[in-house]
Image (cartoon, rainbow, N blue to C red; front, top):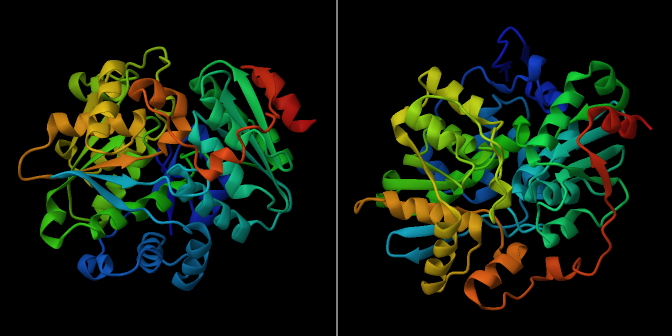
Length: 424
């Protein structure tokens, strides 16, 4: 398939090149030059998850990887379900936290690991990525123990939950973790600066596993099809997806699914108080503010890296901007969302609760709402317990690391120091 740098469309690459390179020239994001609609949506939705996903990705990749190879890769990557759980008469949660690190990012990270394992013929690769919470664990576990791949993960010091930190900062081996004295945006800036350094890229075989990597994005398209497949046929074209949005990769994947022909009615981008996109859609002015720390820390992003891809699809006329709204949910309302879901016998955490609250504000009587449950509530055990006044049991994945030692180094948000570390 052919992907282009959306900043410089004269730079065109294959899927394999885009996966291995991560970013294009001038920090440009790679994106398909064209996306053709699928013609057999109803037949696809009747298939099992892995089989359907291999067909969707084969189509999206224009057969650059064979469907048979994709089916093998996805069998290894998607070893867990994405169930749709009804929480009220017309609202469901798409539970994306049944993977090994209890977060939706297991889907993208594990597919990317399969891609790089297939493509890597150059020897040592260095995966450099930033995380505001769940990416780190998903990437660390997806690549842990893979030969010739070194993983370096940056995260903002004291700005992710302790259990999130334990999930990926205790592995060692080929997984290295750095607590950066700053915000997630500072971590992102360090990653971007690293990719702009051509000598560094070449010296250490640099690659990124952030949601900016096209392989992660494409993997996420698959669970939108899985969600709609679980709805009754007569409800599918009435589906409204509310997406807890930080770096906006999840929304980008949902819109790609819509462009492919999946019968989604519309989308809601739910943000916390880092509300750059809701303000942009209202005023037309892109005006990021300083990042605010919230309970929904994985969404504490003021400059979402995937937004240019969404804007690109709008500008090309692939996606009608009127099918997207965006709502900011403040801290009080997000806590209220956790409580309201609990009253419906459903335990959620702040990210999912934000998407739920935004959906409740917007859903109409004839619509069917789906909000994305992006993390297991136990990953935010302390916050959820404080909100509900109830104890949340630890699943086995978290219990196993709760007493492990954190192996991270601490570093200033200084590119020269990071460069020295990476080349030492």
